[in-house]
Length: 291
Image 1 (cartoon, rainbow, N blue to C red):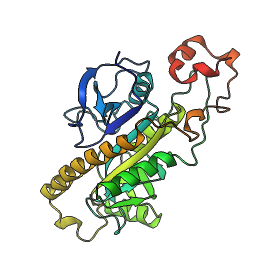
Image 2 (tube, rainbow, N blue to C red):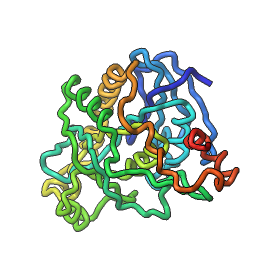
Image 3 (tube, one colour):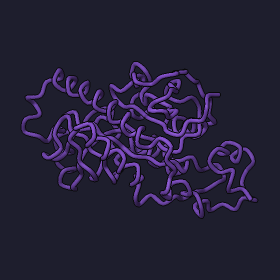
Image 4 (spheres, rainbow, N blue to C red):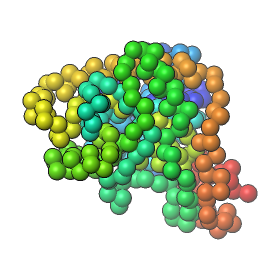
Protein backbone atom coordinates (compact mmCIF):
# COMPACT_ATOMS: atom_id res chain seq x y z
CA UNK A 1 0.00 0.00 0.00
CA UNK A 2 1.05 3.61 -0.51
CA UNK A 3 2.92 5.72 2.01
CA UNK A 4 0.69 6.88 4.84
CA UNK A 5 -1.94 9.45 3.99
CA UNK A 6 -2.74 12.06 6.62
CA UNK A 7 -5.41 14.10 4.84
CA UNK A 8 -8.37 12.92 2.81
CA UNK A 9 -10.42 15.01 0.39
CA UNK A 10 -13.96 14.02 -0.59
CA UNK A 11 -15.19 15.75 -3.73
CA UNK A 12 -18.85 16.44 -4.41
CA UNK A 13 -20.84 17.18 -7.56
CA UNK A 14 -18.45 18.24 -10.30
CA UNK A 15 -15.30 17.78 -8.21
CA UNK A 16 -14.06 14.45 -9.51
CA UNK A 17 -10.32 15.10 -9.53
CA UNK A 18 -7.47 17.18 -8.12
CA UNK A 19 -5.26 18.04 -11.12
CA UNK A 20 -2.43 19.42 -8.96
CA UNK A 21 -1.66 16.01 -7.41
CA UNK A 22 1.74 14.55 -8.34
CA UNK A 23 3.23 11.07 -7.91
CA UNK A 24 -0.30 9.78 -8.34
CA UNK A 25 -1.41 6.21 -7.77
CA UNK A 26 -4.89 4.71 -7.91
CA UNK A 27 -5.80 2.44 -5.02
CA UNK A 28 -8.80 0.18 -4.63
CA UNK A 29 -9.70 -0.64 -1.03
CA UNK A 30 -11.97 -3.32 0.33
CA UNK A 31 -13.67 -2.61 3.65
CA UNK A 32 -15.94 -4.61 5.98
CA UNK A 33 -18.69 -2.26 4.76
CA UNK A 34 -18.23 -2.95 1.08
CA UNK A 35 -16.53 -0.99 -1.66
CA UNK A 36 -16.09 2.80 -1.49
CA UNK A 37 -17.59 5.07 -4.14
CA UNK A 38 -14.54 4.64 -6.35
CA UNK A 39 -10.85 3.90 -6.31
CA UNK A 40 -8.86 6.43 -4.30
CA UNK A 41 -6.54 8.80 -6.11
CA UNK A 42 -3.52 9.15 -3.84
CA UNK A 43 -0.86 11.70 -4.64
CA UNK A 44 1.36 14.42 -3.28
CA UNK A 45 0.04 17.95 -2.83
CA UNK A 46 2.19 20.66 -1.24
CA UNK A 47 4.52 17.95 0.07
CA UNK A 48 1.71 16.01 1.78
CA UNK A 49 0.33 12.62 0.76
CA UNK A 50 -3.37 13.12 0.12
CA UNK A 51 -6.18 10.69 -0.69
CA UNK A 52 -8.90 12.00 -3.00
CA UNK A 53 -12.27 10.30 -3.44
CA UNK A 54 -15.20 11.41 -5.64
CA UNK A 55 -18.22 10.99 -3.37
CA UNK A 56 -20.62 9.99 -6.15
CA UNK A 57 -18.02 8.03 -8.12
CA UNK A 58 -16.44 9.15 -11.34
CA UNK A 59 -19.26 9.78 -13.79
CA UNK A 60 -21.61 10.58 -10.87
CA UNK A 61 -23.02 7.05 -10.47
CA UNK A 62 -24.44 7.16 -6.92
CA UNK A 63 -27.45 9.12 -5.73
CA UNK A 64 -27.02 10.77 -2.31
CA UNK A 65 -28.92 7.88 -0.71
CA UNK A 66 -26.76 5.28 -2.48
CA UNK A 67 -23.37 6.74 -1.50
CA UNK A 68 -21.52 4.06 0.51
CA UNK A 69 -20.72 6.44 3.37
CA UNK A 70 -19.37 3.83 5.79
CA UNK A 71 -17.06 2.29 3.22
CA UNK A 72 -15.78 5.73 2.19
CA UNK A 73 -14.89 6.86 5.72
CA UNK A 74 -13.58 3.47 6.85
CA UNK A 75 -11.31 3.30 3.79
CA UNK A 76 -9.96 6.77 4.63
CA UNK A 77 -9.18 5.43 8.10
CA UNK A 78 -7.40 2.40 6.65
CA UNK A 79 -5.26 4.72 4.53
CA UNK A 80 -4.19 6.54 7.69
CA UNK A 81 -6.07 9.80 7.19
CA UNK A 82 -6.58 11.88 10.33
CA UNK A 83 -8.42 14.76 8.68
CA UNK A 84 -11.12 14.92 6.03
CA UNK A 85 -11.84 18.00 3.93
CA UNK A 86 -15.23 17.61 2.28
CA UNK A 87 -16.38 19.69 -0.69
CA UNK A 88 -20.10 19.77 -1.41
CA UNK A 89 -22.38 21.70 -3.77
CA UNK A 90 -25.27 23.34 -1.90
CA UNK A 91 -28.26 25.58 -2.38
CA UNK A 92 -28.59 28.82 -0.43
CA UNK A 93 -31.48 29.34 1.96
CA UNK A 94 -30.51 32.90 2.84
CA UNK A 95 -29.99 35.97 0.67
CA UNK A 96 -26.51 36.61 2.07
CA UNK A 97 -25.11 33.35 0.65
CA UNK A 98 -24.83 34.13 -3.04
CA UNK A 99 -23.93 31.76 -5.86
CA UNK A 100 -20.14 31.26 -6.06
CA UNK A 101 -19.74 31.98 -2.33
CA UNK A 102 -18.26 29.40 0.01
CA UNK A 103 -19.79 28.49 3.35
CA UNK A 104 -18.05 26.61 6.16
CA UNK A 105 -20.97 25.40 8.32
CA UNK A 106 -20.53 24.49 11.96
CA UNK A 107 -23.88 22.68 12.40
CA UNK A 108 -25.97 20.08 10.61
CA UNK A 109 -29.70 19.39 10.67
CA UNK A 110 -30.95 15.96 9.64
CA UNK A 111 -33.86 15.62 7.22
CA UNK A 112 -32.81 12.24 5.83
CA UNK A 113 -34.46 8.87 6.38
CA UNK A 114 -32.53 7.14 9.16
CA UNK A 115 -33.43 3.61 8.06
CA UNK A 116 -31.96 4.23 4.63
CA UNK A 117 -28.82 6.22 5.35
CA UNK A 118 -25.62 4.69 6.71
CA UNK A 119 -24.91 6.90 9.72
CA UNK A 120 -23.02 4.73 12.21
CA UNK A 121 -20.40 2.00 12.34
CA UNK A 122 -21.85 0.61 15.55
CA UNK A 123 -24.38 -2.14 16.10
CA UNK A 124 -24.20 -5.93 15.91
CA UNK A 125 -23.31 -6.24 19.59
CA UNK A 126 -21.17 -3.12 20.14
CA UNK A 127 -22.91 0.13 21.06
CA UNK A 128 -21.24 3.51 20.78
CA UNK A 129 -22.65 6.99 21.46
CA UNK A 130 -20.27 9.74 20.38
CA UNK A 131 -20.70 13.39 21.28
CA UNK A 132 -22.02 15.28 18.26
CA UNK A 133 -23.12 18.63 19.70
CA UNK A 134 -20.37 20.29 17.68
CA UNK A 135 -20.13 18.14 14.55
CA UNK A 136 -17.36 20.02 12.76
CA UNK A 137 -13.70 20.22 13.76
CA UNK A 138 -13.25 23.90 14.59
CA UNK A 139 -9.51 23.83 13.90
CA UNK A 140 -10.06 22.36 10.44
CA UNK A 141 -12.80 24.91 9.79
CA UNK A 142 -10.30 27.66 10.64
CA UNK A 143 -7.89 26.29 8.04
CA UNK A 144 -10.59 26.25 5.36
CA UNK A 145 -11.64 29.81 6.20
CA UNK A 146 -8.05 31.07 6.03
CA UNK A 147 -7.54 29.21 2.75
CA UNK A 148 -10.62 30.82 1.20
CA UNK A 149 -9.38 34.26 2.17
CA UNK A 150 -5.90 33.51 0.83
CA UNK A 151 -7.34 32.57 -2.56
CA UNK A 152 -9.66 35.58 -2.69
CA UNK A 153 -12.90 33.60 -2.47
CA UNK A 154 -15.85 35.10 -0.62
CA UNK A 155 -16.42 32.93 2.44
CA UNK A 156 -18.97 32.74 5.26
CA UNK A 157 -18.06 30.99 8.50
CA UNK A 158 -20.57 29.05 10.60
CA UNK A 159 -24.24 28.42 9.83
CA UNK A 160 -26.37 25.29 9.55
CA UNK A 161 -26.28 22.79 6.70
CA UNK A 162 -29.68 21.08 6.32
CA UNK A 163 -29.16 17.58 4.94
CA UNK A 164 -32.17 16.39 2.95
CA UNK A 165 -32.75 12.95 1.43
CA UNK A 166 -32.98 13.79 -2.25
CA UNK A 167 -32.43 13.08 -5.01
CA UNK A 168 -35.26 15.49 -5.92
CA UNK A 169 -34.83 19.05 -4.73
CA UNK A 170 -37.16 20.81 -2.27
CA UNK A 171 -40.65 22.04 -2.93
CA UNK A 172 -41.23 25.76 -2.40
CA UNK A 173 -43.20 24.97 0.77
CA UNK A 174 -40.31 22.91 2.18
CA UNK A 175 -37.76 25.53 1.26
CA UNK A 176 -39.74 28.26 3.03
CA UNK A 177 -40.14 26.09 6.15
CA UNK A 178 -36.38 25.46 6.27
CA UNK A 179 -35.80 29.20 6.01
CA UNK A 180 -38.24 29.84 8.85
CA UNK A 181 -36.26 27.38 10.97
CA UNK A 182 -33.14 29.46 10.43
CA UNK A 183 -31.34 26.97 8.18
CA UNK A 184 -28.59 28.47 6.01
CA UNK A 185 -27.69 26.06 3.22
CA UNK A 186 -29.13 22.81 1.93
CA UNK A 187 -27.41 19.70 0.60
CA UNK A 188 -27.82 15.93 0.52
CA UNK A 189 -24.66 14.23 1.79
CA UNK A 190 -22.47 15.75 4.47
CA UNK A 191 -24.26 14.86 7.69
CA UNK A 192 -23.54 11.13 7.38
CA UNK A 193 -19.89 11.80 6.59
CA UNK A 194 -19.55 14.03 9.65
CA UNK A 195 -21.11 11.42 11.98
CA UNK A 196 -18.96 8.60 10.68
CA UNK A 197 -15.80 10.68 10.74
CA UNK A 198 -16.46 11.50 14.39
CA UNK A 199 -16.89 7.80 15.22
CA UNK A 200 -13.66 7.08 13.36
CA UNK A 201 -11.91 9.81 15.40
CA UNK A 202 -11.11 11.87 12.33
CA UNK A 203 -11.33 15.65 11.98
CA UNK A 204 -14.02 16.71 9.53
CA UNK A 205 -15.03 20.01 7.95
CA UNK A 206 -17.23 20.97 5.02
CA UNK A 207 -16.45 23.43 2.26
CA UNK A 208 -19.94 24.16 0.90
CA UNK A 209 -20.00 25.51 -2.66
CA UNK A 210 -23.09 27.64 -3.28
CA UNK A 211 -24.37 27.01 -6.81
CA UNK A 212 -27.80 28.66 -6.58
CA UNK A 213 -30.52 29.98 -4.33
CA UNK A 214 -32.96 27.26 -3.39
CA UNK A 215 -36.46 27.45 -4.89
CA UNK A 216 -37.69 29.90 -2.22
CA UNK A 217 -35.96 32.78 -4.01
CA UNK A 218 -38.17 35.02 -6.21
CA UNK A 219 -35.60 34.89 -9.00
CA UNK A 220 -35.21 31.11 -8.91
CA UNK A 221 -37.28 30.47 -12.03
CA UNK A 222 -35.16 32.95 -13.95
CA UNK A 223 -32.01 30.88 -13.33
CA UNK A 224 -31.30 28.47 -16.17
CA UNK A 225 -29.71 25.04 -15.87
CA UNK A 226 -26.84 26.38 -17.96
CA UNK A 227 -26.21 29.11 -15.38
CA UNK A 228 -26.18 26.63 -12.50
CA UNK A 229 -23.71 24.41 -14.38
CA UNK A 230 -21.54 27.45 -15.08
CA UNK A 231 -21.52 28.30 -11.37
CA UNK A 232 -20.79 24.68 -10.49
CA UNK A 233 -17.77 24.59 -12.79
CA UNK A 234 -16.44 27.87 -11.40
CA UNK A 235 -16.96 26.59 -7.86
CA UNK A 236 -15.06 23.41 -8.64
CA UNK A 237 -11.97 25.33 -9.73
CA UNK A 238 -12.24 27.56 -6.64
CA UNK A 239 -12.54 24.46 -4.44
CA UNK A 240 -9.42 22.95 -5.98
CA UNK A 241 -7.43 26.10 -5.21
CA UNK A 242 -8.81 26.27 -1.67
CA UNK A 243 -8.01 22.61 -0.99
CA UNK A 244 -4.46 23.10 -2.21
CA UNK A 245 -4.01 26.08 0.10
CA UNK A 246 -5.54 24.12 2.99
CA UNK A 247 -3.16 21.21 2.46
CA UNK A 248 -0.26 23.65 2.40
CA UNK A 249 -1.35 24.98 5.79
CA UNK A 250 -1.92 21.51 7.24
CA UNK A 251 1.31 19.95 6.00
CA UNK A 252 3.46 18.73 8.86
CA UNK A 253 1.09 19.95 11.58
CA UNK A 254 -0.18 17.81 14.44
CA UNK A 255 -3.74 17.77 15.72
CA UNK A 256 -4.52 19.59 18.96
CA UNK A 257 -8.31 19.09 18.89
CA UNK A 258 -10.37 16.40 20.63
CA UNK A 259 -11.45 14.61 17.45
CA UNK A 260 -8.73 11.99 17.86
CA UNK A 261 -10.21 10.74 21.14
CA UNK A 262 -13.93 10.92 20.30
CA UNK A 263 -14.50 7.27 21.26
CA UNK A 264 -12.97 7.59 24.70
CA UNK A 265 -15.84 6.77 27.11
CA UNK A 266 -18.25 6.58 24.14
CA UNK A 267 -18.37 2.78 23.77
CA UNK A 268 -21.01 1.58 26.21
CA UNK A 269 -20.59 -2.17 25.66
CA UNK A 270 -17.85 -3.68 27.90
CA UNK A 271 -15.00 -5.12 25.80
CA UNK A 272 -15.45 -8.60 27.28
CA UNK A 273 -18.93 -8.65 25.68
CA UNK A 274 -17.82 -7.58 22.22
CA UNK A 275 -18.68 -10.24 19.60
CA UNK A 276 -15.49 -11.30 17.89
CA UNK A 277 -16.90 -10.83 14.39
CA UNK A 278 -17.96 -7.24 15.13
CA UNK A 279 -14.67 -6.54 16.88
CA UNK A 280 -12.79 -7.58 13.77
CA UNK A 281 -15.17 -5.62 11.55
CA UNK A 282 -14.55 -2.40 13.52
CA UNK A 283 -10.86 -3.07 14.22
CA UNK A 284 -9.62 0.08 12.48
CA UNK A 285 -11.55 2.34 14.85
CA UNK A 286 -11.91 0.43 18.15
CA UNK A 287 -8.85 -1.80 18.54
CA UNK A 288 -7.09 0.50 21.01
CA UNK A 289 -10.13 0.45 23.28
CA UNK A 290 -10.13 -3.33 23.69
CA UNK A 291 -8.30 -3.82 26.94
